[in-house]
Image 1 (cartoon, rainbow, N blue to C red):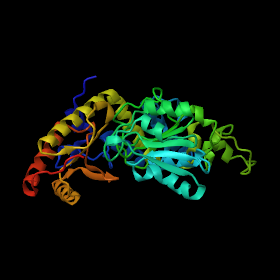
Image 2 (tube, rainbow, N blue to C red; image 1 turned 60 degrees about the horizontal axis):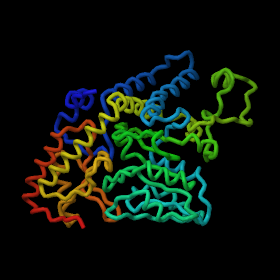
Image 3 (cartoon, rainbow, N blue to C red; image 1 turned 180 degrees about the vertical axis):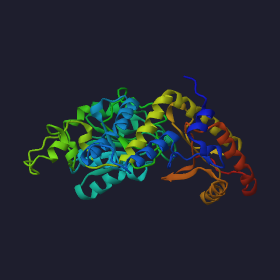
Image 4 (cartoon, one colour; image 1 turned 120 degrees about the vertical axis):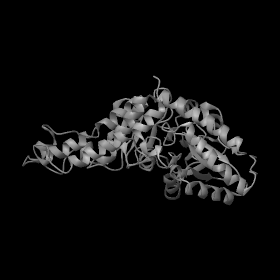
Length: 414
């Protein structure tokens, strides 16, 4: 399918045609017009009660989340029972941390470049439960299955990683890492928030136990709802730490009839569904967020993830070329297979000078970010599917006089 990206952008992201150069989807993205309409329609729906009664109204609101599940299943090529909705990546990672057992004396592996939240729940468990966290470093920050294999031992219970590192854009080879984990009986937990929506993540093509992503970045739905995948082979072996009535088996006649039954009891032998949804809160949920996520996921599927991949990677190539022409040093590895939408570059050895550059860009309404972990990072440019080469041109043209004022870039990659 051939896509006219410029016409698509005018239709779905009209704000980008105004005085805004937005290249920061890796932080918090913006929403398409179809999502705006869906949220507006839901708000209007909530001003009335169109159903036969309030119970039916409540139940129908639950069903308005259905599209989010359906589109997530399609995007991840998952089985229906493997998908749940969560509040955020943090929520999904905490479900993994509280549901997957790591015994005292056992260890988990993670990398030195992770976003705070990836390791945080296990940092708490380390103090409370006596587990060990082993931090994996790799030559030139190119993490491979071999790096994790070298760090693992017979007490390694879990690997917890981002599929794309937020501070250098390195994209993990989940196939080889997943194969290693499956062979060794090690859980693999993946934060995919910097990849899902711009690269193909076919869960039938690689092994992972739990994968989660908030909707507020590359899925363009910044309203507190994300996706969680739980491998169906794992579902019968773990339990949630919280339980909700909407995760139990629907009683005969449905919940409306149950609520109206004089003999209903609160203390009961409840039976729960055997799907990933069992790990949701199971009560009244974030309906606006789920509706927005469903529309934004639907747009990704409509465009086609393969089309998005090619467009985003082409933009990344163009961005790296333009930044190098200005004297910038590219931190992100250039191989197309080892990156997604993030391009990281540096200008000056003095990070305070780089920060001053960032402030000058923001004053001109050119929005990129500056991100570091363990001294790795720099300026972060997000090449999203709604971006065009002209956005990169604006970034470069805005940087030229700033660099002329601040001096020749002097950062050199070690």
